[in-house]
Length: 119
Image (cartoon, rainbow, N blue to C red; front, side, top):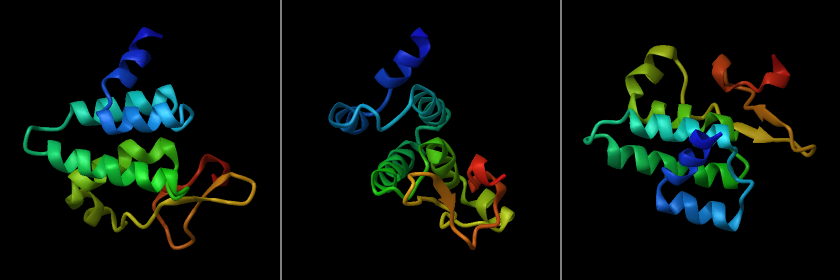
């Protein structure tokens, strides 16, 4: 359990500030995934990774990105070649329905962006 607490501590300050305002914004698992993704970046990728994280948090707050997809979102921004090879775009973002459940965009054909409920 201690390692997930450290995951929150390892997040950038702008994310910590968002969590102070809304503690339910990210789960411990999502924080750990973000920490892992940011930890795997090179020094050259750091600025791009932080920019992608800011974009992902904005999308999350707008209800346009499933929290569990943030690390994948960052990875796609860092590795656009993988995105082109798979034939997907970052437009395959999950949205929330009136019930609060996440659902993928209808034109998304990438299995990683579909919610578990749709599988």
